[in-house]
Amino acid sequence: PGLFRCPTVLAAGLCNANPVIHPSITLLNLGYMENQGDRMRFYADGASPMVSNMIEALDNERLAIMRALGYGEVAEPDHTNSVRQGYAESDSSYYETYGRGKGFGTFKSPSTDCDLAKHRYLQEDIGCGLVFHVSLARVLGVPVPVSEAIIRIGTVVSGDDFIAKQAKTVATLGLDGLDAAGISSFLQTGHARGAA
Image (tube, rainbow, N blue to C red; front, side, top):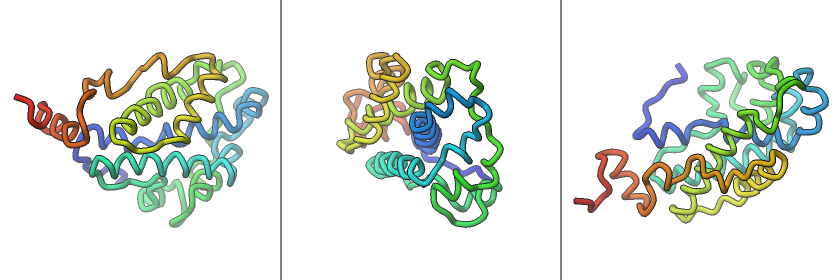
């Protein structure tokens, strides 16, 4: 019941909410996570009302990128799917879904044995997810100041320069030099619009 068709693989990738959710909770609860490890319930303890504001701000930037590409929006939380999958009880806010939703209540934070600097919540969700969002947003002319700030903060706390690494960007995916129409054409046909 949580599956739906996306027009391109890029649209499917932009529907992934992990880069929106995990870095916000991790960075804004880092001291708590380092000290409490898996005694902290990642969502129930970490997605407070103010942390949920950060999640929503990042999600608004993700949605702006999707709009600029002409994709239909899939807001996170997608209330219909969240309710259907048991994560939320009704159409609700980011806080009600993540901080109070019964489906997220038992998820634990990484243990204190874990090197948080190398955890996927930073390495994948910032290093691949948000870095790509920012790269794509620049091509599309979409401002993403919150995503840029999260990348910089993640770089400082982890010691990994996510921008310099360029793990996944428009350029590394072979989409550099294309505008929104060119990206769309390339994803549908394998050729950029106007390419011979």
